[in-house]
Length: 393
Image 1: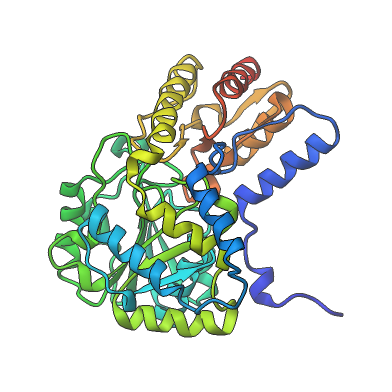
Image 2 (image 1 turned 90 degrees about the vertical axis):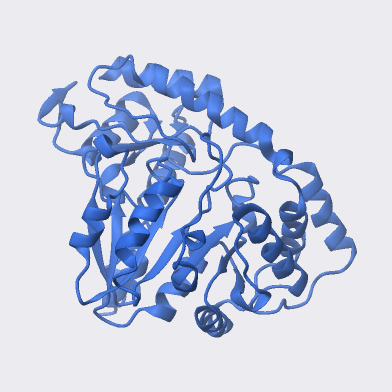
């Protein structure tokens, strides 16, 4: 009997995409579902970026692109790293991919050998664990809690390191918690890592610009970390370009070379028109997208205020991205409208079925006491969604 490979059978389905699909299914049945499950800005792409894409079409960019990206796009990325992050990456250290997700997969496949351990501070982005497993690595979760703003301490990092530890992966601002590591916190982690020079760090900075505390910090800029850090970024979140699928890395040259080799056998170069538009996005000053950041900030404050009125929801104040990650464990073991809530998955499903609001279980992010709520939606939608949640809990 034919069956998928064990590799595919053992892989989890992306919980965020699965919930979004379920929400679409219910909408198609005529149900009024408010989707707060996807990490997708609801803004339109800025006009100056669209104009660059139209120009690329008129300029007949149609041919296969270089595997690692157009040379002038890589130069624009290099300039962006220098301007925004004070990091010097040559174009030989940069690889453009079909989204930051492919960038992460490339790095895992290039660096990991079977049995290598990868430390994942939990909560972590939903795909990290399965990407590591696909590369035959072993995810090692380090649980954090709302008490520490979902950030890993140096002591926790030290305790998680073993002779098999090969990598540390984390995001800041964090998906799903919205937590942002300060420079001092990154320096604390770096002090531990300096004792273990063989460990490679993957710093996912896709939410870099959606930062409400001001001043993003990259761990590659901490003394001693540059030569062992892969900085991952892209344009999906800050520029509302999720469907255009462009991500990139700045990395030690040997990793970048390996990623280019791998990509050459998997997808080759990323979309030509999207790449040309990203040059315009990255060359523009950050002030061009400040209106989106300001709106996200207002929405965060609104959501925190509204959730604060619901008994049983424990929330902290996320300083970036566009998520809140409430601890809802107070509902575990309770019965709501005839439904027993045993875990966060039960709670998320309950909200979908009884409040018609799509969220994502924290179990998918390694934090089983929480759910993720995206506020990348309009204020009227957010008010209505949270009113519905309050009504059913």
